[in-house]
Amino acid sequence: MAERSTLSPHELVQLIASARVRDFADGQFVQHQGDPGDAFWAVVDGHVTIGRFAEDGGFTHFGVMGRGDMFGELAFFTGVPRQVDALASGSARLVAVDRPLLRQLMAADVGWAELLLRSLSRQLASTLDIIDSERRLSTPDRLLAMLRAMAADSAGGDRITATQQQLADLLGVSRVTLGAALRILASAGQVERGYGHIRLLRLDGDGFI
Image (tube, rainbow, N blue to C red; front, side):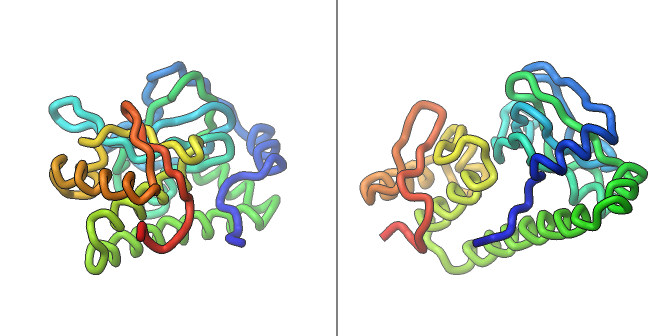
């Protein structure tokens, strides 16, 4: 069984006791793409949608963070600007973990360092999987792998909230190609299509066949 990369109830209590909890209203931005990565975020309550707004206002949905999830670590540790937009989905409460707070937490409990290493390693592994799938997998298999990764990172369980255009943008294919791949997955009993969402019928496995 894979080790967790989210905060435990005990770690959430530690965090809340050490830092100011920020409240965000539904639809309020937590961060914008291009913001400085001077802290990363931990979700205390509620949900946060992660994605990227295009110049024309279109939004590409990457995932939903829930209680105990962290995001923004890559920008924080590498010093690069934020790569994604994040906004509250419903009311949400978060803590911004900056360097002084992180040092304080790690001094009190070395488990914080291990947790962050697991989180970063998981993100790297996901990126390598995407690169590998680009090289060797068919479009339906690439789509299924992406949907499973999105579900694993989402508070929605087996349900991914995204339009076909958003999924096509993420996969780097046309909407027509994406639609054909979805029909193949649906006929194989892997997914169920709904309005603005996809439900995974099988959460594990190597391929759709």
